[in-house]
Length: 377
Image 1 (cartoon, rainbow, N blue to C red):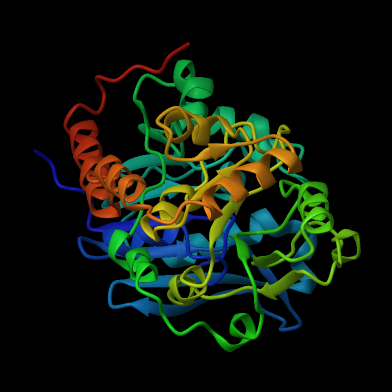
Image 2: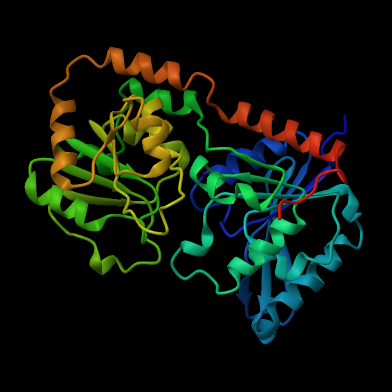
């Protein structure tokens, strides 16, 4: 059976050093088997000449940032094509797998014919705030070009499954050992340690998906509870966020730091709105919270309800009153051994290594059968 190509070029809308999530988990594993180039979206520079600035993150993983001269800003896609032409001048495109997180990259890559084209459809990007107008059309083109498609969750798979004949759901997985460290009380980081009382926490990007009013109502109703919010605020104005004394915005933290923060929480929250931007999300934090041994309360996000809610592993609430009720219920439970055992059993086979192994197996099968796979109409 054919092996994966010796090189992989990933086109991403997310920056490598932003929030450590699905792309980093998967591509750092690919870097054990091939040389990975992770190409971020461009930035603009005052320099007269555009270039791609590469930095080494792992022995076989390089992050490239296209630095586009402001003098060429009006023709970014053309400049990016020229930069990639220069990059491939000393390489063979057929030795590469192209891995797409953003269909927008087709604007400057559609002419290339790599060994295999992979679309890891992590989110329904067209539903996100400020999504480019061309995104839907480019995703359709990418579906036609891709040899294999992965989706970031079951709900997204159900929405996309008729668009490709070789498509597979891969909900985000977990690094259990990393988060299980939170079960043994770690010395809390200083900014959280000085906050005293019952702590309900959330980590992740605080954006248009975040239910601001749910958090505000909980803070108003239970001023003795401390709400810990960890993560960057993006695409929304910080001015609209509630500023109760018992709401604490601790900013972005590294992936390495998260277990230390989790260890000080009594309950973990997934307070997402139900809207177009959350319709197909599959929050990675759900199994991460569970691995950390923290009870979870979530709004009824489809990929949290199924499978976690229906298996009585996560509380599902719609209102602040319901969130508070479930929190009080959990705070009254002294012994969580039964829930922890059930959670551990449910997550037993859930790990990034298994996800990577299954993905690469499907990629190898696709390479073996390339030319025999027809796209769905």
